[in-house]
Length: 218
Length: 218
Picture 1: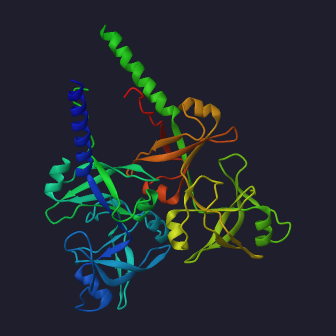
Picture 2: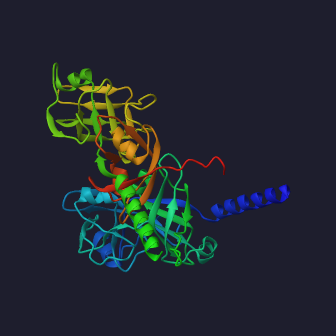
Picture 3: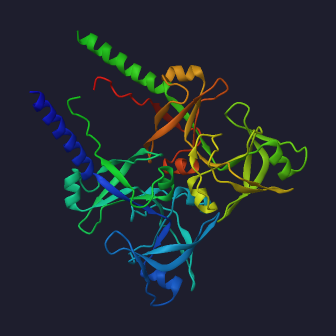
């Protein structure tokens, strides 16, 4: 009987550890960056220009380009802001809230690609400049994963979860978007404000926590 | 009987709301700033100099001075950094982790006044400059309150609590220090990284959560 109890405890502890292991996600910290479409790339760098691959990013197919642009808002400017490839249908600038104050733009917190009602910015390249009429966002914190990883964690595409961080500035981040696709690599994306507030750096681990649905009987 | 149940529910709901009300704390966002001692003040602004009161801060006796200094690290400099009064025994510079990267100093996350093993910085004033041998910290997030407020929330001086924020970037911040003194005004201090990561601004409210002590029977 005593042995039974010990066995049960051991089994529960192992299950809990496995569950934590299943929900461990490495962090990727995003500094401000720019995505371009072909037309804006050509206005900034010249006709027929192609991005130069500098560094492979963790998400399959994504890369940091050698090229940078300056971004200018009503109140300030950042120089040498990295362009990420490949090209997209629409140009998009991702900044932090802190960057927004320095540029003088009030960018909403958004999922990548949702650009309606977002402020524009001026991009300055070596061969010309572009005034984006819209496209500036603060990225909604999110986790990339494959369908297999999502199944292991018990979550679905577009689900909102919490993520727990460890260390000196530990916290539980709410309102984290899950993005599931075959062409993903497991990674939680946070911006620099979030990384500093939580004292997180690239490849630190965080733990996904499913938000319990309210009990319909409660 | 039915009425009894309804009465009990109503009572519980009111208690819970009162409990939340008791634990509501307004936020104060701190940008980088400098505290000076008399000797450093005189080196920066001239012999016999006195700080000029510009704005009363929420904590009793504290004020933002009209005077500013530049702070310079191995990699960068910030201009016009606000001095907070009154003067202290030791000069101290409070920056964010993001500021630390720009200055090139690795400041630890510390309670104000605990300056052992902290990096120095150069301060530049209108009449001279000072090289602080130590004194640069990233402030440990903390809550100021009076003994009466602490009793209402059921916490003690130096206790570590959690604080829950609301809104688009809601989260639960761990490792929050409680500081109780008669000369306090209820306020949670966060730095700019933390404020932006949580989309908090001055006078937003957060909720203190006591960390439950582990049940000794468990």
